[in-house]
Length: 104
Image (cartoon, rainbow, N blue to C red; front, side):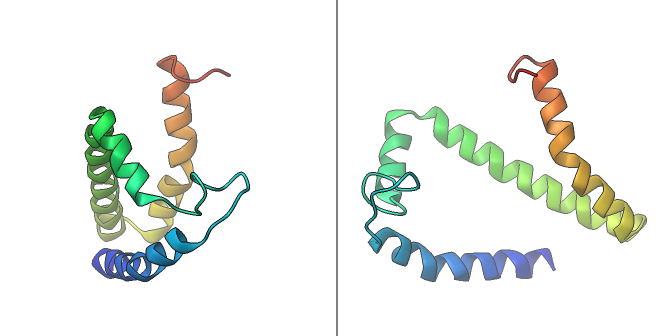
């Protein structure tokens, strides 16, 4: 199921991303005149290589979360997976506050 989710996400953005980059706009959600600007994102990665490290870190984090979720559902139940999923944001925020990355 996780593979299907990834496939549909990939296909969606294969179609949607070129459309988003063609939409010109001038309000708060714009990226230098367009709704989405991938070329500027790649430029930022060349200027700040640590962004590439962060990108791969996020990819690994999502992969770990998906494997953990499938394993939790397999070994326990979908209700326990939903509980873990709903507390994820609060847990990350609490850890960020404890590490001094956020303020309360």
